[in-house]
Every structure is written in structure tokens, then in C-alpha cells.
Image (cartoon, rainbow, N blue to C red):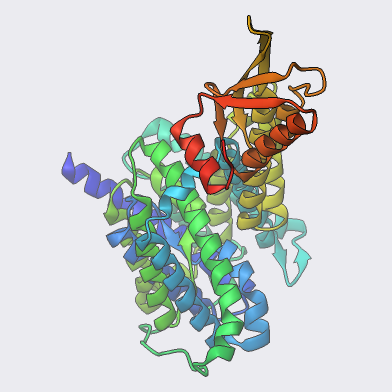
Length: 480
């Protein structure tokens, strides 16, 4: 059994490496840097996170979400500032993990997760259409038909091969099979070599050639923070998704530490920054990769491609990789989120759609932040509506209010509306047995209520406060 899992990891890692190459080259070109920087970054980050991270089976590399963040920096200040930014961003990621802040990912609601997955699936699919262009113009005629035919054939192999055998990853068979077909019949279609030349040497350790002063820090810090935020979010969300697929549990903090160390190492060796890549992770998992070996193989193969195998790798048809990525996009998209649209609350559907749209239109960090804000506001609104009070007159002529719910900023108006100071008797009792005080707004609301009764010449008595509520009121300076 162990030998079988090692074989599965080996083949899955090899398959993932083929898919990593065009993505890393494309993202390097997006960031306007040498494609070798993307490949070096992929090798370093993929290998180190696989060896030391908290989620075996996950593939990391030079991700597009991070490439988009640093384009402006490269254009304005150059590549050396980018390397310094990757160093600082890695340090932020490392500190995030050491401070055990990975648990904050629990604050991301499930609808936001679905929106994240759907958004990235759409981005993966849309990114493939760039390969249907040449020199800024769409392919036409026989060139287009050949490309479409090869893409369709690739997808058919990936979908149908598992029905015949699961001995080898279907994506690997599709890539190698289409590559052999194009080579043997000398079919005129675009290959990896048309994107960029990937031959190179070993990466060398060199400190970024920049002035090490506060002025430089002021330039790179905003980019480093944003890069770290995007990288951590994408990594932790991909980790959650991998946990669900494998029915195992990863270690978010350990993954953050490994990702930080990997990015710092990449910056020192002339590589781009990176994070977990959901498309390549899905390819790895779908190919049977579950252990650390799959990620290590994927990373090491990237380096071998650069050092020794570039003539062979550059012959891989882009159509084969496009077909594989289209399948990945289809399998990544949470189609179940469409089926439950009419069965779950409308606000959850709104969050899914909003996060999906914002992910496609802007970036992951903005989308997740907006999703959390929308979900939080909805949560606050729902809890505010759930606060209510019942009241009755006592034998001594006083009135007793029993308030149920949570008193916080969103429910203060509802809370105050439950009382009638002008109509109530001289003695009023507020029973807080079923009322929770959450924030300073709750304290202010209670003070406002007491002042209203005082202005009406009446006395309000508060009873059955929990110890936590008493402490909160004391800290807020209220004499309950």
C-alpha cells in the first residue's frame, strides 16, 4: 500500500509540474519580469512548502493573484525592489504563522468559501483564452480549428480515461499523448516554447541591490503587506478546500510559517513570491497526490526542466495544458452552489455571487474581505432582529421587563424601543437573565434607558446581570 501511494505521489507530482510551467511563465509575464523568476519561485516555494508545510498534497508556486499585486512596483522601481518586497512579504507571512493567526481563517463563512472557489474557477478558465491569441490577435482558420480540436481531445482523454484505468493520472496521459501526437504528425500548433525560453542555470543567492533604508521600506511595505495578505488568504482557503477533499485536517499555522520561509528564500534566490495554487492543487489531488512527495516532485521537476529538459518541455502543446486547465476549472467550480440557490437564505446566495464576481473583477483579498463584511453585516442584522422583550405588572404595582437576545451596536435601537418610560409605573425592573451585553454600544444603550426613566421621574432597577456583563459595565464606567 505504501509503495502504491509513493507511485501515486510521484505521478501526481509530475503531472502538476507540467501544469505549473505555463502558469508560472504567464504570471511572470503579467508581472513584467523574466519568466525564469517565475520558474525559480515555483521550484523554491513548491518544494519548501511541500517539505515543511502543514498540508501535504497542496501545490504552491508563483501565483497570478500575487503577480497582479506587484505589477505597479516593478514598472515604477524595477525587479530589485520586487525581490525586497518578496523578502518582506515572506517575513510577514512567517510572523503570521508564528503568532498562530492561522485560526482566523475560521472567520471566513462557508458562502465566502464557495464564492472564492467559484471565482477562481472562472479566473482559471478565462486565463486559458489568452492561448487562443497570437501577437494580440485571435487565432483564425485552420490554426484555430486545430487548437480547438486538440483542446477537446485533451478534455476527452481526461474525462474518459478513468473509466478504463486509474493506474496513471489522466491529465498526465493527456499531456504526453497530445504532445506525442503533435510531434509525430508535425501539427502546426503553439507550444510552451512559443511563450518563453525556459533554459537556465541554478538560482544564485544574492541580496536585492537596493538602498537598505526607511525610504525603501516606505516603497515596498504597502506592496509586501498586500502580497502577504493575498498569499495567506489564498493559501488558507485552498488548505480548507484540500481538507474537505481529502477528509483530513491540515495545520494552518505551520503552513503559514513554511510559506513565509519559502517566500523569503525565493526572494534571496531571485524568484517571485508565491502561495498555494488551487488549480495545480486540484490537478495533484485529482491525480492521486496525497503526500509530501507529490509537492516535492512537482517543485524539483520545475528545476530539472530549467536545467536539463527545456528542449523537451518547450515542445509541449499549449492546447494540451489548456484542455487540462479547462477540466480543472469545471471540477473546481462548486456546481452545488447553483443547485441550492433557491433552498438557502437569500443573503447567503448574495454573498456567494458577490465574492465570485469581486474575485473575477478585482482580486481575492478584496473579494474575501467584502464577503466577510457582507456576511458580518447580515449576521448583525439577523441578531438585532431577534432581540425582544416581554413584560407584566407585579403585585406591588411595579413593572417587570424580561429582555431576550444580544445587546450590541445593531440591536440598541430595537432594545430601547421595547420600553415606555412615560407610560410605565414609578418602579421598573429590567431582568437581564436572558440578555447578553457585547460591546460599548450595549453599555451606552443601558445608560440611555436609565436616563430616560430618570427624566420621567421613575426608577429603573437592573437585575440578574451575568458576571461577564457586570465586568463589561464596570469597565465602561456604568454603575449597574
